[in-house]
Amino acid sequence: MQPNPTQRPRPAVLTIAEVMDILRIGRTKAYEQARLYLDTNGEDGLPCIKVGDSIRFLRHAIEDLIGEPITTTHTDHLDTDPRHTTTPIRTHRTHPTNNTNPQLFTA
Image 1: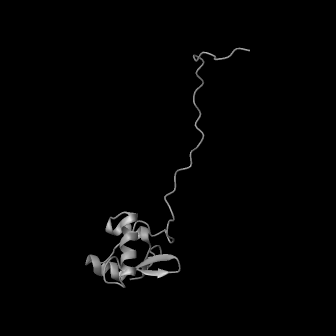
Image 2: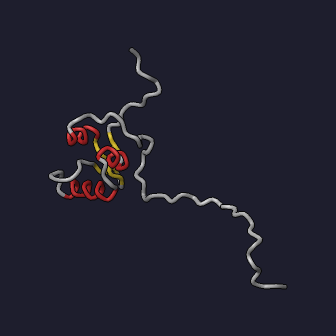
Image 3: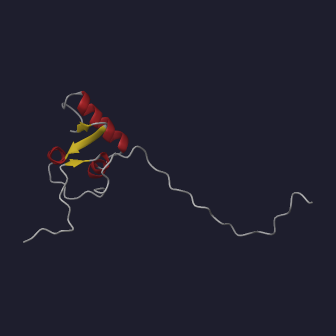
C-alpha cells in the first residue's frame, strides 16, 4: 500500500495553537505551563523546548502526557506562534438612505 500523497507527515514538534487545541486549554494556561516547565527544568508544567523566541512542544512528550497518540490537529497549517488574536477587518457597510430624518440645518 502506497502512502496517500495528500496526507502530510505528522510533525515532530507542535505549536502552541496545536497544543491548545489538543489539550483543550486556553493560550494563557498553555504559556503558563510551558514557562513553568522551562523554569523548573522539566519537573513541572507542559513539556516543551525553546527554539529562538518560540516555544515548541515535542509530539511524543505530549502523547506520553495524555497517554495516547495524537491523531490529528485542526491547526496543522499554523507553523508560527500567533503573537495576538486578530480582529476581523471591518468592511464598509452601506445603510439605506432614510429620508425621514429631519434636517438639523438649512441653507
